[in-house]
Image 1 (cartoon, rainbow over the protein chains, first blue to last red):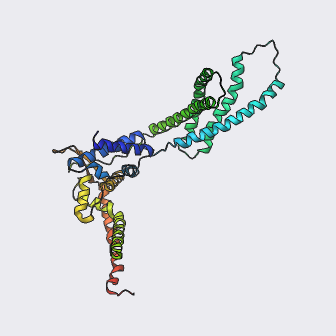
Image 2 (cartoon, rainbow over the protein chains, first blue to last red):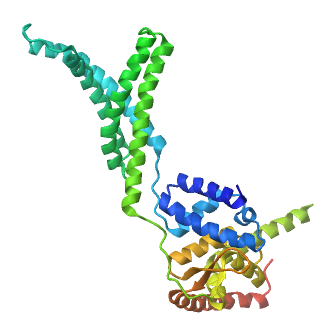
Length: 231
Length: 128
């Protein structure tokens, strides 16, 4: 890989971190490559031209080019989703504990009616799970309302988080079965980590998709100036 | 030792003031250089140095050219070079020419005012 490729790779990482969309990154890189190649042909050293702070140069260039930036803020989004999950789990547990006796008291199902065990399990654990997922989505939607495209992120989360929950549940159950349903702390911590990782993955995916949709819709690229005749 | 420190401090002050002065005039100077003859980015860096501005980094010039292109003050096009890769050559647009004329007039008014303020200082002794 030559020096120009290395510099452009470094600039691309800086642009990516700065929230510059892929179309804009490609346009900026193509322009810069052309200029650096011309400079190198004139005897200039591309690395020396840009200087030591390639990331700073790249960010300045993006600012001056007026490209539209949308920050991912993945850390904040995932962190907020996990806090919402914990709050949702507490609420869901409370709901389960308080609602179950009430339901038993209010609804007396005759013994002649055979309720499938799967349905009972789905209701008993599905409702708290829905509360947990809703906690993550609502926390992100409300707490991070200042972030761009957060509404769309929350919409996608409301689909992807339950899907992640459905996918990870049998995996976690299989792990629990493999460990003989142990309550040993490392086993329990691993099970919790598996669930949280699935939720975090779904959140990151929702955020990424919502930003990608935004960039595609905007179709933004640095405006081209009028062309002139050759000198 | 004190003299060395004082000289060093003076040099830093000079550099800072030079940078500040340049900040307000760099885009205008680039337009003026391009008005004389279109050029590619690296060539402009050399022209600025030759004009007496000292070493201005490519990292400063290139983003500024990009902004001027966005604003429609300059335009670029690829020119085939017989000796190397294609060149992205920048030239002034009509809007760039209009802006340059306006900025030049503004600059002359500004420097006249500054001169008028500074000139009496040349003849008045400073109070110690």
